Image 1 (tube, one colour):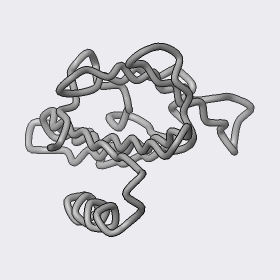
Image 2 (cartoon, rainbow, N blue to C red):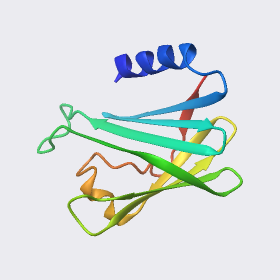
Image 3 (cartoon, rainbow, N blue to C red):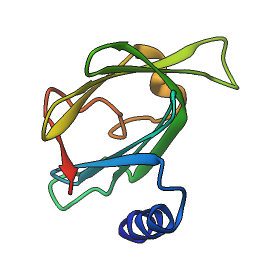
Length: 133
């Protein structure tokens, strides 16, 4: 995940200067969440990924990862909504993203299990993903 973050930042530096990209990261125990928001003119693209690697205290839990990305809509000031259709089900995963000055909070709909399972949920559980500066 660190390699992906550094490669993404390197590509952004060399890319079009009219694009603005913000990265957010949360490490919560053995779960790492990453959120990338790119604004290019009026288009907003969101990418969220999560990884979980069980530790010694996590008996019976398995490693997992999940990713979702797509075009998001601004539903209010400092609020984004990513709605992604599941290819395997007739449902939609919705991520509601609350942006703050130093971070972001994510809430997911119940239908996001098609994109991430078990301990790999996109919801930040009320915790704030810290904005990478």
